[in-house]
Length: 249
Image (tube, rainbow, N blue to C red):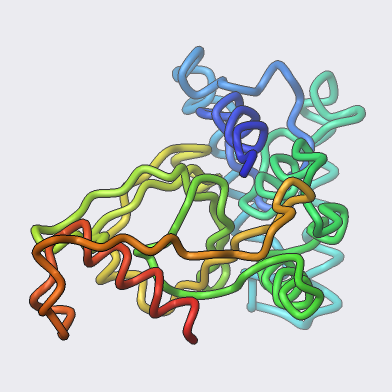
């Protein structure tokens, strides 16, 4: 498992402005929200909001064709206003652009990260295809979420940091993500509750360093020899139980 390169780039993009459709933010804007919050809030944010509001995927006040025309005019106006920043770059980055950029950093992935150069649902489809090819594992069991995992919910994607909070039974109840969250927040880390994530999908990418088939280690706990149900297990035993059940599926 080598998710560090994914997370290293993700962390380097913290506090970068969110731009709907943005894929390659200018270096000057990386970390801008933290370093120059006043400029971002008073000068840049109002224009980024308009890029989001009038994006063809969000705006429904006219025909699809007219939406594209209107959006192109608005984007050209805004990009011309910030011409020094947008000659070869975007002003910010969106959620799928964030995931794509981060996954490009990991050269050990079996999935071709260039296939993630698409929107949020397209990225989920790429992982589902990769699963069929034995290059990823797609699931919704937060008890086995790990650092660098891809997480999808309708219209949004994010990356798991690997940090979790457990209940008294050893089950994951909260997990941390790093994501290009929204126009008003930019790239942030966020703790999310598992109970609010029932419609989320997790994808764990396999790497060329994963040479052996997944094998669940067998632990024999002195206190568990006569236990048959999950409710009777200790926290440590419960983690193993969850892993075993996931493999059985």
